[in-house]
Length: 372
Image (cartoon, rainbow, N blue to C red; front, side, top):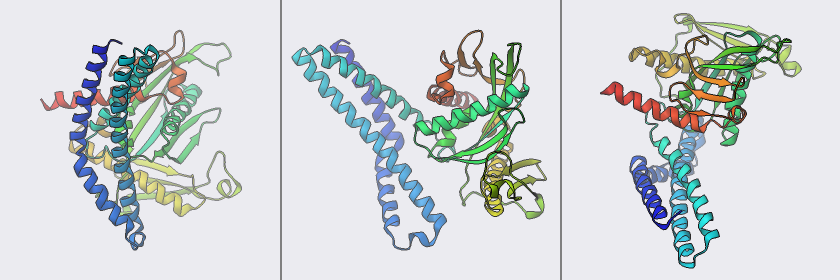
């Protein structure tokens, strides 16, 4: 890269970082971190466990954001010095190293910039994801399991904890449905663009004639609620069913009626949880999921847009938002953003950041167009 190119790229990155800093309100962030730090240091913090969890979680999220910005700013300073020294000494190898580092910094700044676009009411929340097999028989059930693995692998790449609430296994292979949470700041805002119908085309491993099969799975993403969120559900509106857990598990899981299914009678919304050994724990977890889904319905109704929080998730022909093609060629393509990659295996292994970034930018563009 020529000296002029280095100068221009570094200047552009500094301008972008300045904008990001203004959006993040670094001074306000530092002040809130200081205030939360005082609250965390209080000896009676854990007398109120819910508030303590909220305070420590908020502090961790803000400190992580500030550290990420500060680290990038420092790396940009370092690479600028590296470029200057390398050019003065005519060190081609060092310049190549600086070029590689600058590319990494550029990607990291782009990711941080995307985070600043997440300004929706619930974007900063953790996420509850539901995956459900659609048309396509056993291939669809296998596809649903592949998608669940894709999201959990993405979480692992980012060191985000995953909590599985419920898995309903299909008879031959794969999953009928699964519900799990990703515990990370901005998980909902980041992953909400994944909501909708996903389509897989491949040679079916379950077809003894080796024919190509098309199958579908639906993904729904809703935010985890906080205690301050106003979602009250009268007891008479909920039907509670208990049953025996299925699938992998120890004796106490599979031989007692510990699994819980909640049905919200007015809306027909059904959720279930079977990950805990205790029926009471499963009921509490199921209530968290139910409230999150009812909030999604409430907000969608308020804005008269049923796809606003849930995504279009019919899981059938004609309404897919992303195609995963393994045969006759290899490609994953998002039909809304036209973003595509030629390595489906990497995508199924959790490499979905490109799709998430493109989806967030697409959503912001759509919202601006609608506002205008």
